[in-house]
Amino acid sequence: MDTSKLDSRLRLMQTADMKGKVVLVRVDHNVVKKGKIKDPYRIESTIGTLYGIVEQGGRPILMTHVGRPKDKKTGEIRCDENLSVKPIIQYLEAKLPIDIYCPDFQPDGSKGITHIDDSIQPAIEDLKQGKTGMIYLPNTRWFQGEQAKGPERDAFCEELASLADIFINDAFGSWQAHVSTYDIAKRLPSYAGFLLQKELIHLDLVLNPSRPYTAIIAGAKYDTKIGPLRALYKKVDHLILGGLIYNTYLAAKYDIDIEGISEDELAMARELVEMDSKEKKIVELPELVESETMEGRLAGKWQKTSLAEIAKKKKAGYVVDVAPESFALPDVQSAILEARTIFVNAVMGFMPYFPEGSTALYKLIFENSEAMKLFGGGDTLQELKNLAPGQYLKGLDSNDTYYFTGGGAVLAAIEHDSPYHMKPVEALMGAVSHVD
Image 1 (cartoon, helix red, strand yellow):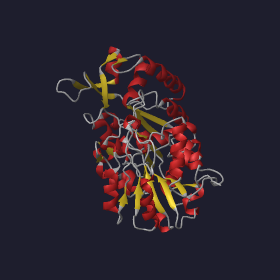
Image 2 (cartoon, one colour; image 1 turned 30 degrees about the horizontal axis):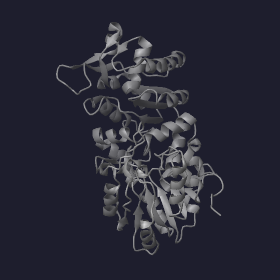
Image 3 (cartoon, rainbow, N blue to C red; image 1 turned 180 degrees about the horizontal axis):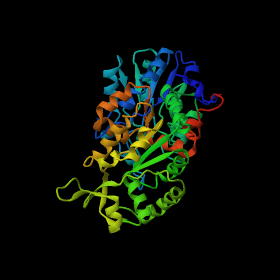
């Protein structure tokens, strides 16, 4: 890995003295849904870091969040087994020749787990002596202090710090400043893991691309994408939109009443329409799929349509996908096939009922053998794997394709024009933190 492209202030795990030390590792193994692993890619991506720690003599304690067990309105934390790390532990034990211990801290009702108690100490001694290969803490969001703002936050940070000698952050996708990603990095000597380093290196290709540069962005919420869209628009040569973002753009530009779009979203979209009125970077996809309902792909309730038809009527039902015919049009093909950098954070249609647009998009992207192809994580990667498995596998073994483990983190970096302004990464910069 060529670390020369990284900011020289970033502390790297290969420079840490880990021999005989307990190493607390924040990973992003948020891959469990309803008690089962949806896709192990994020787990697999951290294996190199785990081997690196052990090779340098470190004794790892892992931690990750899983889902959103905290109710935003009430503050209650639900320690549901469907959001447990146990499936992750089982996967790692099958993958690696080690035994993994997971402490069984008991929650205090709706407060979640209030403390890391002394019951973990014998396991830490076993870890130091090599009797246990690894410790994996429970879901970090089960702990009361993880997302708290008061004394519970400080207490949780101190308890985490008491477990280990060194902290390594390898959780690129977990870019929010929580205790396990940010506070702890200021409490222990802290370093970037191999995966985090790799993600940051490839982010430079998104922020400083070879041209022509085409970005493809879709999403179900416009308000969470407007900041990154503004920043990305300034960088790209061509921008292709999908999902509700595209529907909102069309409604704003052509004054169409499209189902499912709010006035607030329209107001934000008008800004993008105004930007594009001058530079004409947005490549429109005129062949669409319209549905009377969002309850599924119901016979007689959906049909192919066109931008010209709905612009003429000034009204449309739910636009649930881009028809594959859009990706056969010359200007669309040119934007994708002639690009030298393609960034994709997009599922084009309402899944799982309308996959055709996404399938056509992914297959067209891989027809470009010259471009550097960079895919955001999460749903984009999951649907690429499901809808175009041959292309997905080709990308895994190709130097011209990279799969990020966190799409939201990439968008945050784009919005700030740098990944080094994200709080968890910022905490790994400069002199090594330590406790006297």
